[in-house]
Image 1 (tube, helix red, strand yellow):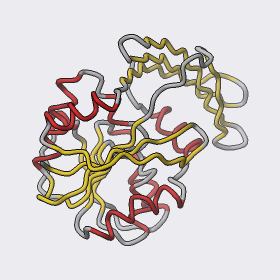
Image 2 (cartoon, helix red, strand yellow):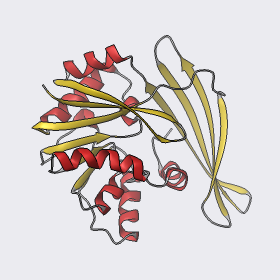
Image 3 (cartoon, rainbow, N blue to C red):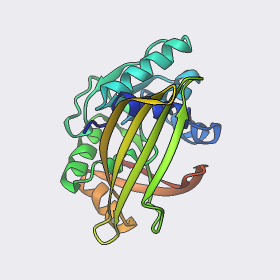
Image 4 (tube, rainbow, N blue to C red):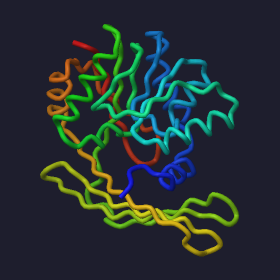
Length: 243
């Protein structure tokens, strides 16, 4: 199985687009209060990064998926934006040449790091790349209990081409893990031309567990904001600073 491959990145762009003005405003407020270089960790194809770039901020991106980063470059080129600095790395092995005043991890992406020790390692690496008074902003979520375990969505790319996504989800409330087997099908003129499968595993935390996790990584939680940026549900954005 692939992870965030070519069909996934195309489907993501077609269905997610860019962050809403409300979401961009939220993160921009922190950048304005503490000016400096910004890192969007697990940046994907630039859903949040590109709107921040358009506002004139210096925003680097890091992601483990080469396909997602390629899509970000393509989208920047289409918008005549100067290409940002993009790094193909996991947060568990983060090694960048800059220090950052603000680091963001949007739309629950950090919960893809489902092993706790690796999550602590990732946050420690982020901490090592932040200024002493920097802001870390991590969007978190809790999966919907009782949701349909099988869902089908489609994204039309053009008059001939569609990507169909079938997701089969297994939710373990006891361990706070959810597995999703995602099948992407590229359909051209009604016929399946390519299939891509991936296994996505996410973990979620109680507030107490989040506090312990951040503290172990060298952060203090300042506040947890509750915002509704999109229809999928409530975002709980953890604002933390280096201890």
